[in-house]
Length: 196
Image (cartoon, rainbow, N blue to C red; front, side, top):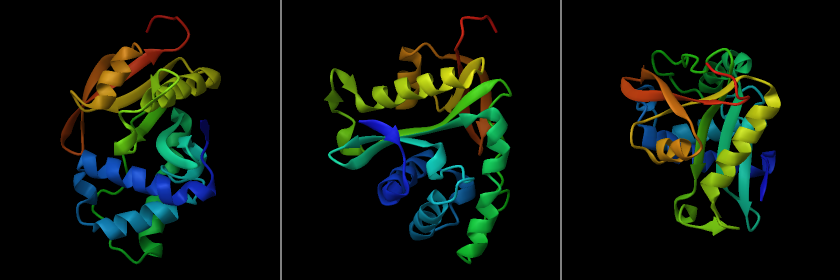
């Protein structure tokens, strides 16, 4: 079942985000221990203006537990979300990594899908003929269309599972980017039938 994330999902969602950030191997977070990053994500999850806070999240629930999560928001909101990183590091008395502020990734006319992940043991499971990540992607596209913005955007690493999933939904690569010294492709999906 798809639904908005709530405070109650903090443990399961923070764990999902932690595993996804570890997979991304972000250099700016390497100075943090797994415990510190886990605590930061758990505390941040409760903050409404945190990039990975509950208001930006939708979860796929299976047997009462969030087993998948998708984070997305309109481009205009993105600059306000990263302001919480510094406050969270200070609150947890952790020295922040250099260049902590994340460069905005969404283009001005986009609804941006920041993160989509499913717990490992649920990646091979389906419900009503769709994989759990397909349910989350379809829901994200629906939310993006409701926003009224022209396009939906996301950044993917070449060959990643998310890149393959996005291709199935018609996303196209429009830009090659370096994020945290790694190559990503910015993908876009036209939401209203107009040409770029």
